[in-house]
Amino acid sequence: MLHSKGPLVSVDVGTRETERIDVTEVLESYIGGRGVATRLAHDRVPFDADPLGPENRLVFTTGPMQASTMSFTGRMNVTGVSPLTDGLLSSNAGGFMSRHFADTGNAAVEFTGRSDELVVVHVRDDGVRFEEVPNLEGGTVPETVAYLDEAHGIGADQTAVVGPAGENEVRFASIMTSEERAFGRGGLGAVLGSKNVKAVTFEGDSAPDIDVPAGQMEIHREAATDDHVMKEQGTVAVMDLANEVDGLPSYYFSEQTFEGVEGINGDAVAEKKYKKGTCSACAFACKLPTKDEERGIETEGPEYEVAMAFGSNSGVDDIVDVMKSNQLCDDYGLDAISAGNTVAAYLAAEDEFGNRELIWDLVEKIAHREGVGDTLAEGIDRVHDELGVENWTVKGMDFAGHEGRVLNGQGLSYAVANRGADHMYATFYSVEYPLVPQEQAVDPKGTVGKADVLAEREDLMALNDSGVVCKFSRDYMTPERYEMLFGADFEDLLDVGARTVTLERHFNNQRGFDRDDDRLPYDLPEFEAALDEYYEVRGWTDDGVVPDGRVPA
Image 1 (cartoon, one colour):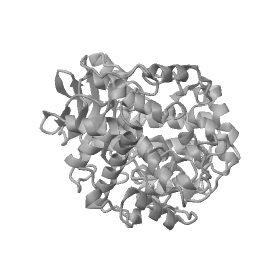
Image 2 (cartoon, one colour; image 1 turned 120 degrees about the vertical axis):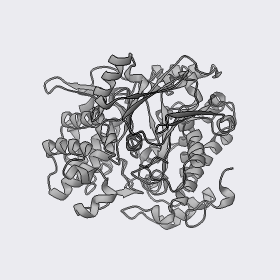
Image 3 (cartoon, helix red, strand yellow; image 1 turned 30 degrees about the vertical axis):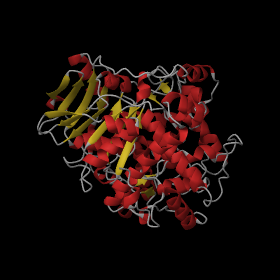
């Protein structure tokens, strides 16, 4: 089975000590990326660790496909205990950092402890160096990236940076790379910030020799030549369809259509796109560099989820306004989905939907924990009672834009996902929307009878995150192609994903998570029966707990 190579480098930022650890057996069993990081975190992080305490470990990993030149491979993974969900969580980002990480020769790099001084940690193929940077305290992501370039000649693509939000331990702070790509969901930026680490850089010339089959180039050619709508509109291409099927969350989830959708849809974004954008080695180029010269706004995006959160869910119908919200989140280091939804909760409480100036002021206040921003920085789950609004979260994670009240399998996925209400955990929406090819389509109505498909999709997404292969490769990857690339039977590859999901669930079970946490703020047909089916497929108890005999060795 194709897998990453190299040691785990464990970095204690408090003692400034590093240790190289042989993890070959883990790599052989879990490939790389999320699978390897989950296994390491499960075994090395105390089950009762405070997410913002020194005992939490933040594990950076990439996968063997970073040795290829294939499209859909410019991504990497970070894993740790989330300050937003309080469970083990992995976050995934694109851009260009994965190959710089591979150049260090390491399969995994973890950070533990807490530094007394604000530091940048430079991870190189010849060792780890610490640089105290009191001058960067409170610095934005662009300011930090500019310093690293000017002081060291280190480019944005080699960096993982937290902005003020991470330093201030906002529970949905992101880790930013290439300035505008985010390890977004779950607040792992706050974990890095809690360790007093402003940035991590990766540099070297020691990428391991991993032989990726030549068949990768067929996938690369198809990605380059296919006329796909995402190349022009990114994920926001789905917005009109979501609105048509009453599946576009609006006005803090109180409505499911938005009358101003034409102002924030795919066509609106495409009008502001001024060049192509991509990730390392990828010819699919689905990113969205956008600009409005009249107002001096330049950003990357917004993608669908952000256009939902800061657009329809906040009552905003101007794409340039959403672009500015997106830009602010990138600069301050905030997960733009959670930031937008949390702002929308405040707008609902104050009857201020559509107030763009208030929105931008709230984003800044959240990042700096100033005034009401200090409250909102805790996330919807912790502050909804104080605001007097409904709790639109699962396991503390606020909802993505694919509406479970319409796409019922996606709703079930939100409920059982170890990461909470995140759409990428199983991407079940991708088989429930109308216009899905018949051989892939699943009736969006109902929950019973979908457990097998849901578990398989969770396993497949975990496999992608271990590879690492972008989930937007779904139109190009087949079981035969997975087997060709990774040199193993497809069922054995899915088993890597299944063991990863089970390890996440087991870790969270030790923190008190069970069936009571697999809940939605709305009713779905036969939901309890569907939960029973899902647990049976997974081999877990009726309480959603992994039995001792099912914990991967």
